[in-house]
Structure formats: structure tokens, C-alpha cells
Image (cartoon, rainbow, N blue to C red; front, side):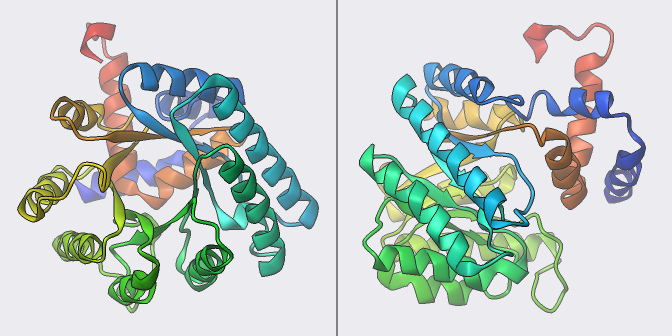
Amino acid sequence: MALFHRAIVRMLPAVPKRVVRRFASRYIAGPELADAVRVVSEANARGRLATIDVLGEESATAAEATEMANEYLEVLAAIEREGLDAYASAKPTAFGLRVGYDLCREQIERVVRRAAEQDTFVRIEMEDATTTDDTLALYRELRGAGRENIGAVLQASLRRTHGDVEALADLRPNIRLVKGIYIESPEIQLKDDEAVRTCFVEVLDALLAAGSFVAIATHDDRLVDRSLARIAARKVGRDRYEFQLLLGVKPEIGDRLAAAGHRVRLYVPYGSRWYEYSLRRLQENPQLAGYVAGDTFRRLAPGHSARSA
């Protein structure tokens, strides 16, 4: 199966853009903020929370970083205006981290400050391993400056993550816990799937023990079940965790969790850079590429109806 997934990835650059758009339509709200507002409103009506991400590659100039921050201010305005149960999720490189650390901090702090004024939240994303130190330093600095309405992300596949949990423990951080989609060297990243699952549960345990709020972000059914078992064993209150899923990916997991009374939050990306995002996410995660391709084929197959979607 892994060979099939990698084959799908190798074919992606040759796939016509209109076909990629068809792949992406279920997983991306659309090119405009209005598309994200519509999708989040529908999700809220079904009892799902949301986090909104503006699609974009790394900012190469201060002007691009400022423009990205301005777009996030529009996202926050829409959340407030429309009464959405949602927050924003921001990638440091889109805010100019590669251009300069101080620039990135300045632009993200603009967004975090505005979010605090309207009593909402900003998740600082984690990207590839070259950004991990700066991203965690940024999170700590903002918390030290009194910004409480921010969260971070930790990747269970990185060998350093246990140490990062210990280093952040004094902050009782709000953490989104993921496996990690970026492909790193074996020296810094676990490559065995079961080892990653084990680390994920160990990190979940450590975060809960430290009093952190944990956003459990996974589409791995085994990890969902193991996480539920740890939550039950610890008698963790439902205000201390939630489950997070990518828009359109394995929605049956979200249905099952919501039916059992757990909080479920959908990650809703939108923006004009949908094509670059789609290729990057699928290339970074061959298993997801295989799932998307198979799911799209099933939906387009003769006899498939909207009722079965």
C-alpha cells in the first residue's frame, strides 16, 4: 500500500490543475474568505468548532509578511462579525520567519493582540524542523509578554518532542498534538509508525499530567482509540481536550466522536494558493494522498450518490 501512495505522489505534478481542484474541493473551503465563513458556519450548525488557516507559502519580504497579517486581521473580523465558533491558525514562515525573527514576531503579535481584544485565540503552527526552535521561542516570548490567547503545536514523530514538553511545562501550554507531516532525517525523526503512535500517547500523557489543554489532531483510528482510553483512565474533563480533524478527511471519525459528546474542531483552509497547498500537503503525506485519491474515485464512480458521501 505504501508503494501505491508514493506512486500517487509521483504522479501529482503531471495531474492537470482542474483535476487537482477536484481533489481539493472537499478539503479546502475555497479561494475566498467568504468560502471559509460559509464552511465554518455550516460546521458550527452541525456542532463542530473550527480553526481557519489562510493558505500561503513562505513570505519572502516584509511587505508579504505584513500583507499576510492583514489578511488574518480580516479573518478575525469575520469571526467576530459572523459570530463564528472558530479561531485562527498561523504559520510563522508566512509571517516572515525566514526574512527575520523580529519581523515574524511583530506581525504575529499584531494578530494575537487583535484576537485578544475580541476574546478569541490564535494557534501558532509548527512547520519543518528548521523552524522548530524559533517557533517555540516565539511562543514562549509571546506568553512571557502576557499573551495568553495563543497555542503551539508539537509533532510526535520528532525525537526532541519529549524534551520540548518538559521545557514548556511551566507555561501549561495549549498544545495541538500531531504526528507530523514533514519528512525529516532519521536522526531527528521516528520512522516506524508504531513508534510514532507510542510517542504520541506518551506525549499526550505528559501534557495532561502537566495540566495542559490538548488538541488531539489525528486521523489514525488506533490513535483516536488510544487517546480516548488515556483520557478515560485519567478522568480528564471535557474542557481539557478536543479532537481536531482536517476538513473533509475521514469525517466519520468526527461523527463518532461528536456523537459520544467529545468536542470536535475542523481545520478549514482557504485562499488563492489552494493549488500549491494541495500539492504540498499531498506530497508531504503520501498516505493522505492515497486516501484522497481513493475517496475522490469513490465519489466520482458511477452509482455513488450524495447520500453515501
